[in-house]
Structures are given as structure tokens and as C-alpha cells.
Image (cartoon, rainbow, N blue to C red):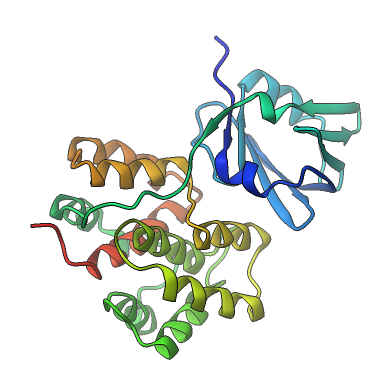
Length: 271
């Protein structure tokens, strides 16, 4: 059965109408394209929709992946992505796909049931960086309702790029924390401090793209769904959504949920 192919609203906002780049990286079931400084994620099947891109039918994705290699030319033009691979040209007409809004919702204060669900996950035993005194100090700063600007910048500088992988654990913590602030808090000071720090501190291309998205108030589909469920008081939806997020990367999901829990702890709960 053919699935509905989808495209992120953030991707449509950021993708160049006309631009050229190349395939950035290829994985078992997805790939990334970099064009005009914007990183695009192409996924397939039942994977959650990334705010950076599109989800294609498994048949289309399965035909594309064996053909492409990092460095293949990629061109955006007239609502389509053309990849010039070793067998010819693959065309992905993303303007024909269903648009999914991935702007983070603004909600009432988080329900206590969400904090309980996050605390029950044992996140400190699952994240990808050591839970030592330095991380505890960083999280304590982020748990303050209004951390001082210099401490906030210092904390973001400590976390940015910390850890291994395409999205280091410290970046994932920042992403989850920023998403929580967009939903329930005041994201302005955090986003301002993060932008200043990341201008001078290098992390991976993939992390930089996701951090840029959360600075602009967007996140992946399952993260948006979790915050929407929390805002609507639909606690029965928490287990499935938390499980879906936890499957991101090796520890990326757990790391981002630690960041979200930290944001929830910084915000007075609903009564």
C-alpha cells in the first residue's frame, strides 16, 4: 500500500526555491543533502518526519538509496529535488507531498503527569555522556526559571558539541530543552544565547541544522506530538510517544528527553 508522502513546514520555509548542493551523507534508510547552507533530511517508511525534510514512500526511497553516494550533485528547482546519481537523475517532487506543520505548540503549563513519565524513564542511566558533576551543574543552571545570561551562555558552551555521533548528546539535550521552553516557557534568552555561542563553537552539520530549527521554534514530528498531547492533557498518549522518541539514534532520543525534563523542571507545573 502506498503511504502518504509528507514534507515539513519548516523545510518548505527554509529550502531554496532554486539552489544547488550535494548529497551530504547516506544511511541504511535515509540520507541528507546540503544545499545553500541548509541541511535536508530525506527519510522513508514509518520513520517520524524530521523538521529538516521529507518522508517518502518506501518504494521510492528503496529505489533511491542504492543509487546515491556522498558528493552526488543535488539541485532544488521548481518544487523538486533532483539528485544526479551514478545511474542518472532521481527526482523528488516534494511540493506534491502533504505538508505537516512542525512548529512547536505554545501550551499551558506542563501537567505533573508528564514530569512523572519523564522521571520514570531513568534517563541518567541512558544518556550518551557521563552524568558527572559538570553535567549536573549544567542541568542545575537550566532548571532555573531565569538563569543569568552569562551562566546560560557558559552552560550552552559546555553542552554544545559534547559527545559523539552525528548529533552529540549535549546538542540533543539543548534541543529537548529548547523545545520545552517554546511550549511552556520563554525561549527568547535561551535562543539568543545559543545563537551567540554556536556562531563561535563548531558542532556537526546535522546538529547545527537541528539547533537552528529549534531556535526558530520547530522540532521533529513526534516531539511536537508529545508536547501537543501534554498541552491537551492526553497522558494516555505519553508512553507511545516517549518510546518513539527514545528510538532516535543510539542515545539521541534519551538525551533530548533529558533536556525536555530539565525544561519541565524549570517551569511551574499545572495545578
